[in-house]
Length: 153
Ligand SMILES: [Zn+2]
Image (cartoon, rainbow, N blue to C red; front, top):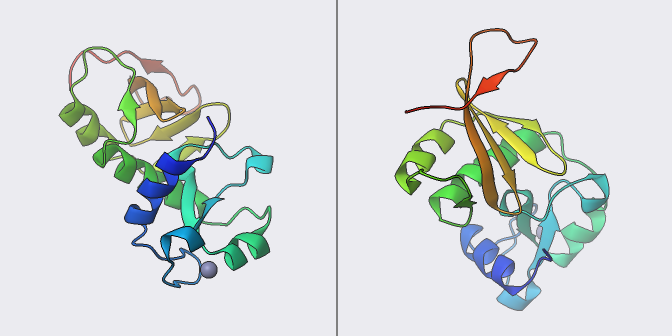
């Protein structure tokens, strides 16, 4: 997936037409798409890793990874689900159900080829704006991070 028109349209609306770094109001053509975690550092093209930026801020940020990237990406993930921009590739799951579970995501567990978000009891694996897997965290054995398919909510 490459970042193009569709992405920019969504980001421009989501970010209220303002640069997320300096707050400058941007005309549509002035806005650029910034990868919050840079591509060169493994940041995906997914909506939760993209934000609207002016050219200047995009340029000076370069390949820096912001300290707060985990919380920003988690927030943007929840927003993208709410906005219907991330779709479910999991069978037998209603959108409302997914949204309800996604809303509780409070940490980014892994970023890479696929991204893993977690709440206290669920884990969601997402790639290319599609939810690949949703599972319930089992037990309290933190060392194993074992998951099992969830039967119901
Ligand atoms: Zn800016």
